[in-house]
Length: 470
Image (cartoon, rainbow, N blue to C red; front, top):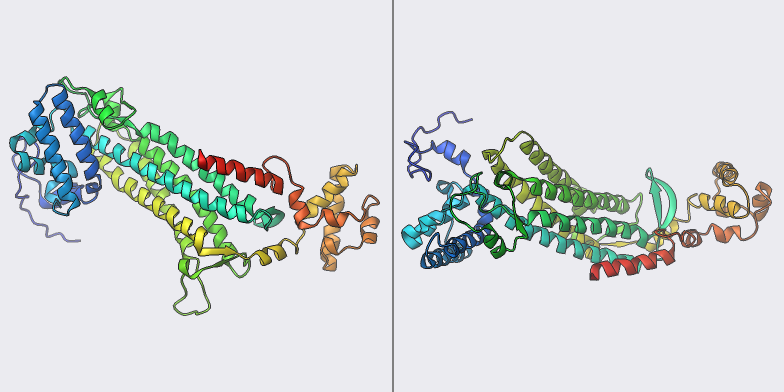
């Protein structure tokens, strides 16, 4: 740690009032500054400031000519930023001061009127909400793309069978489409959840001031309408200090990552030699620097790893908020990096997993067919067979347990037992037992609503298609 920090203050005068006799120590200025990350909000800050300027003119707080000057100056800054000509440094402290300072350079003293009836507290809250509602819409679009790929895969694999597991032990065979549609349903909840959160994000705090509102005759509903907000915060204290919307988003983002991580874990298992249910294509995997035979599942491993990162941001913001008194506190500056990184992480993971499913792997259908034919996952169907013939299910269950135990000792599968062996176990067994325990029959017979039966899966595909189209 460098203890020989310079003691001279920052040369530039402070942006705040003459209450201060000297500027910040340069190290504290760097520590205090957020321009390094909140520059991401610049387009939203400009848009929000333009709405504020229009409102000031609309209410007569400034003249129409001054309002036009401010709006045009802000638009010039937007173009400068897009062209790479506006790159404020740490001396600007944050994006809001950077914009106001440049505006004053462009339009003169009129630029100093922009901050009338506004505080950085309600300004940053507005910018963050404008930013987040755009990102939510982007993520919802990505979720739809992800669901579309899942649906296309499922449509191709209705009658492809895959072992189903509980406790990571073979349980019952499934339609592969049914398995994929489970992730479609998880993603549907994610899409719906973000839509609900969007409505709470889309409330304007602009006009709340620092914490108590303002003495100027502003029109908060006018700015909300200009910015396409659904409404305004009813309480100025709540307006500047609320971060529930950000926490809710991070909760939703965490659940998206949970779902992507669960699928990632399955793909990692499926790609292993022990499972060999899928093969990875070169476009979405890498090799080993020392073991030439290896093909590594980089995409799902990275998604699985990045999941904890998003969880951490949620926990950080919860801890950040839990002890803050009303209203605004500088601690809230720390919400930006967590929010920005979570957005980037979720978007990149959704993109990568969509590409992986669409073009980076393929199911090994012959291996899957062999897998569902080499275990005792049809044992429940033997019990169901007997129950359908009047044998009490618990009695049938115990009988089948003994059959499995005996078969394992003899190195046999249920399909290998002769009809005489079946009948010696119970006279209700007939030749149709072989059809009843065939994997395809086992799957198709589970035709209860929401089950893996082929008829149910085809109906589920139609419903899923309607959800995407709706």
